Image (cartoon, rainbow, N blue to C red; front, top):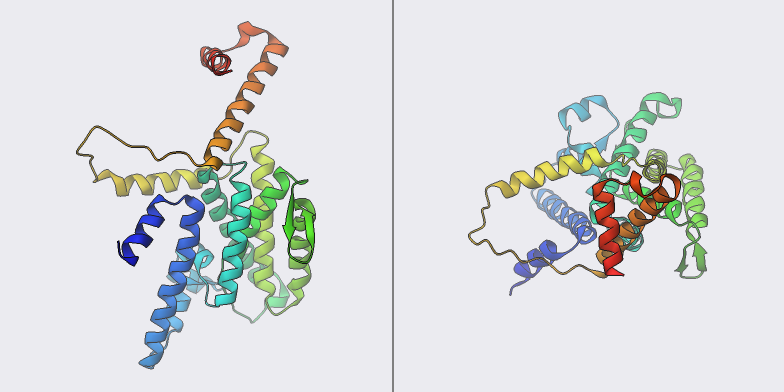
Length: 292
């Protein structure tokens, strides 16, 4: 198997975290190679960068309406890319301990969109940005939403950082937010404002999810439709289908969800009695009792 086939196979078989990392890496390489080619032929490459990064100007946004999505996968600096990919990998794995792969994509996009919205709004509202224009790129806002969601879900969970040792997620989240607030006074003011938008997205995601509402469901439905469009023309020639074995993260997530459903059913019995259960709830309780 050649390099190309190995990469394609790895992408197809990887989970959503792997796919997000591949998309960031792939776009960096493609844009970088195109910029090199344009430079060699002395062709201005600014048009390409403007077509993918999120501009602070209405005119650019109207000409390139896809940039609120593309900017959150776009990196021009290698160090920026590596730092974001490593952070996405670490916190993406923690996120998948509590939520599904589908949730990870939904929150990544929601965090990036809200971060981009705050960035764009800041240029329109604050006098600091008067007579200035800018462009935003990078996955930082999207990743910030995942960091804050992890900290909101299990604030006491600890991770080990080089030079710092074990640190709880809640303090890491506080530090990340304070750093972004203080860095609004830096040259990258707009970028740090977008980080705060991502942080807000992560907070809102867990806040509403704990109250029974997934605010990324609309994004997930759009993704599902796009995926279904690509699969509609691919018809299976055999009735036999083979399912990929669940990973440990997927299995633990499924078990945790089942346990939460049973706890809710038992609480309902405690409050209203067994007769208050629906047929579906009784079937779930019966199935769980047989497994145990």
